[in-house]
Image (cartoon, rainbow, N blue to C red; front, side, top):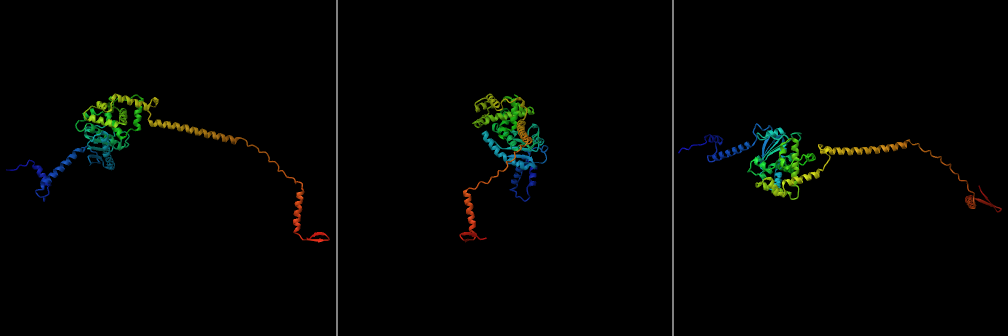
Length: 399
């Protein structure tokens, strides 16, 4: 029987790759190895961005379960970020109580324009974002520069933020559901609030936005909070600040870590968010919003409305400026008072001192018997030192 080859061109191509001196028994094994290597390289090439989208000067490299795309000039920074992923992924698994797959596609851009170029075809990234996650695809994009200021954001916090989105999605949805059904089951404010909380992004600026929104009466109810993320820039900032504060309220209390794992387990089992939340925490979303608004009122109080719109930094600087002004005025006043006292002392006439009294001369006191006796004895002493001669009963001193 004549054998008919189904793949003549494939056999011919593989035969051209087989070394001429290779034994016939090893040639099929070599051909199979070539096919496996070709398929593996083809699979990795399909996962990479299309050539027309890849900006020049970028490197694609697989580190563990993660495929990294980064600027070749920023390879040290990319390697440093790669070391953060393992520990962050482990911490997120502990927080959610679910071990999820770490298979990710991480793309780092130099600026927002190149981040858009690295995005999947047809996906338009938000103009205000330094990082974006596509949880269903396991895709994360972050930029080395912010879109509005072009300053470098905190890359570690930015990476943790986007990793949290993917980990939360996989902890709740797993690999079974589509992106549309997952978005209906996971509220946007919950995902964003948990990401801000895990990354430690509760900055002073975000607190200021929440403070101004509370004073102006612009806080959004929880059931309408998701819609604020697609609005204009100022509303988006308030939505992020409000979401982060609500999530902090339900995560930072005693026993809240266990309740949050119960919430994740209920949603993973198929329950909708609101009944899952009530079962995990023991109260409804309406009760949560009421308690949270009371806490906001206690934190910020009812400060004068004239301060609405001022940043906390400027308000604090104004207070320091006023305190410094008062201190300088007091110091100047003390200096002027001291100078006035000194000038008054210099202008006053000097007092004239009275002339000293004349010296008192002591008159010679009259000589008493003792003085005469002393003089006599002194004379005798001096006389005893000179030779004397006695003649006819009388003494004469020789000179």
